[in-house]
Image 1 (tube, helix red, strand yellow):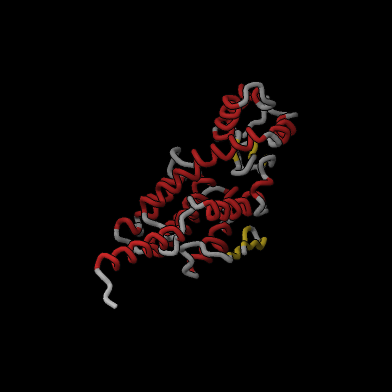
Image 2 (cartoon, one colour):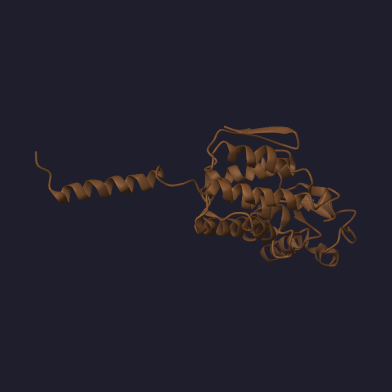
Length: 262
């Protein structure tokens, strides 16, 4: 039976649409809800020693890293400004909330490790606020605005897939951006001195090795971050295995503790 060119074209179009719909021909992307959840689990394993990131909205403690209180799903800090921004957003969405009264103190301690004006009840009130769906949503909004979205924008501009996107995200979570040579942009600049990202014609694995090398160097400049296992026994393991799309199952270690996602 003879098949017309028009019919063949229609069949090929349907195949292409089906492929795009199922995603079988597309590289993994952390914007995909499932992949984003995987990224959150991996970060939580390092930040909270648990992959259950949704249980961390009420987490708060001073980990003695010079940044005051560290809290919530991404480690918002009273000494670095992101906790202040979060509580201000919470106020805008729910005036009169339990944390609003701490805003003057959060402004004063910003840039320091001081608890002045926060103790003795701030940690208790934070945990109370964490039961509020409005505060939970505010935490997710600030996580995406300050960390997740900027990391993905740069990762996609550099042409890296899910593992690279995660490496960028984890780096910006720990080091922040826009403040100095030891921030996320500083790490990327150091990597650029050694390799080129795929968008500039470089090999993706070579680039990510250079980025991870720069990240490890940066971590070792700060005593509180000198344990580099979240790179060495997690990201680097997947890179060596060629798992650039962060395909599951995943196994890794952070600070000597083993984790997996099946």
